[in-house]
Amino acid sequence: DVVMTQSPLSLPVTLGQPASISCRSSQSLVHRDGNTYLNWFQQRPGQSPRRLIYKVSNRDSGVPDRFSGSGSGTDFTLTINRVEAEDVGVYYCMQGTHGPGTFGQGTKVEIK
Amino acid sequence: QVQLQESGPGLVKPSETLSLSCAVSGYSITNNYYYWGWVRQTPGKGLEWMGSIHGSGSTFYNPSLTSRLTILRDTSRNQFSLELSSVTAADTAIYFCVRDSSNWEIDYWGQGTLVTVSS
Image 1 (cartoon, one colour):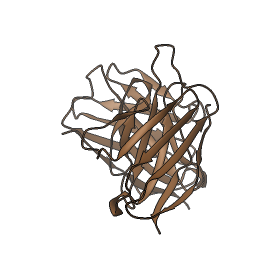
Image 2: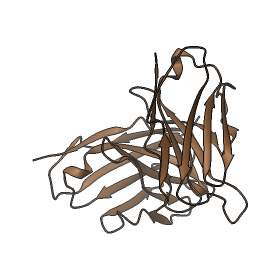
Image 3: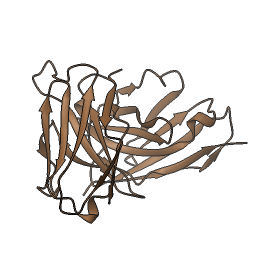
Image 4: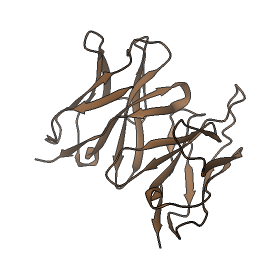
């Protein structure tokens, strides 16, 4: 299985400041169809995960534009431009290029 | 609006079979574009995709669980279900039902249900 490694695992941030989460895969996530199936999910306390980003950089409907995804190959980043209080939670990357889909271990974002 | 809702017992004895159902509203599970599956979450292993059933009825399982896992569907009730046999304490988890397109693009999640394996 593809191993997804996130860093940092804990991210204290100041309100209004940017935050970045790294996700690295154990092999390239470029699919034979040319797409890169890398998703980002947010899980707020007590809630189910919610997808924010799919195919590396496509924001889901209703996701604030302060969230952005980037990267290629094996290295990916989720950036929050200006962190708000409602962004507290755990963020997961997930790859879907190589079956079975696998998740990163999660990054906990908290306010300083 | 697609909604998924898990149901089932919250406590299962070791060596028995864990059975959960997921009721889907707002979309037909027989549409061939989507897969309907299960993801579980544990403190130790994090999030794990377990398996799914396609709109055509084909099933796909995580190789780590294939010997113990069965996913079924009831098209008349627009719901699908999970059966995990020979459970141990390691199967204690929050179980989510999900919808995804090919390549694990999970776009909808149920609220999740906690299942504890204990005698």
